Image 1 (cartoon, one colour):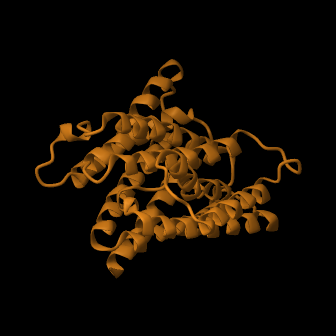
Image 2 (tube, rainbow, N blue to C red):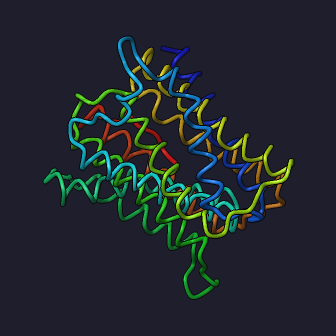
Length: 291
């Protein structure tokens, strides 16, 4: 089990590094172009995701195609929002909004899955959104596209997760992973056509880091959840915040004030509590990730 937890930490370190690479582009390429190349390079993980007897066509052979499309489109929009947010905001602030995902899952589960949610999880939801208000401080600071994009990223991740739960446990891993790669690849590719910019050597290096590290993280997460219980691996995603603070300060000169740090702690605590409670309900964390 310890090995699986360590793989979980390695997985989310790779995700954080991937985000640092795309942030290093500083908006010199359109976000949908970065998402396209990220999806293209994400295909490199497929041979490691495929199980014995799986075929390449299994990427598209979902038992419930509508849910596959929901995951694909949510993945595309979520990735575009993620790149936009990391371009415009400090990394720690973006992650704090993305970590609203378990809270959004709780809310969507009530309406879409008719799931009963007790007072403890509703309290966590309220604390999480109070943390958002502390971080954003509407009326005291100017809110922009990056703030909206980061919140939408967390919401898209939650939609993808709820679709995963509705799909049940019969879908193959390669199909689940494929939806999250094909969606960004196709949507990003179509959006970039009218304004395509050829990346130079430096930009190509950053795009390669972004896509290949995300692909590596997907493989590490799969192996982590194969050898350790999901409720032990899932909380390791919150280690991304430490990486975000380190990379933000060291590479990008990000500065966080005390109110923002308090809000981040509130969001992290509420999200982690909700995540643990969700894991007691279902084992869907075994088969998904955070953007």
